[in-house]
Image (cartoon, rainbow, N blue to C red; front, side, top):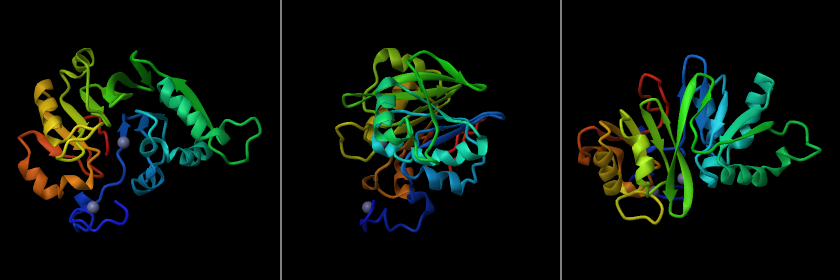
Length: 243
Ligand SMILES: [Zn+2]
Ligand SMILES: [Zn+2]
């Protein structure tokens, strides 16, 4: 947190140094990023990303879309617009927030974006199949995504039964756990643990962690078996999603 001198923000532990929540999902032929955070440019630079086939959006909040302009680097190298996938709520916000990229007369060098509206129907990008799952961020519908046996859920604190069915059977779940205190639109630590247990997913990683949760090393010790805090650069699973 900018300006904060709490024990997390001043921690020397690399696992306490978190950029905004996002994952990279890769197969041997296809690379997708879920959300373009305000840190997107630096996240791509620090992993040395050379290729990006598409961006998948969970919801239109700024901490999940603000970095979109920097896909233009991939436009230059790949010589084509960047396909974006999101629900109508998210795509409307993208068109508003990045209106200059959709203008009739564009300033040279602005990002080239291709909008693809998704619903709760399954779809594929390259050889990666994706099942969208609707979760609730207070009153905003947010999309979570299941890739094979890996499910990624950010910014939620409620999931309806029919959507929970889509998550069951996952081997790995990533879910938001903001802090210990209750929050109006995010699961807290206790609620996130309860969700993992209810869905009986054997391995879980918590993400979208606030500095209010506490230091990685200390919280990690309090977690039940199979549940861990995610951290930047964490790589997991046969399909290798990267945090
Ligand atoms: Zn702090
Ligand atoms: Zn968020």
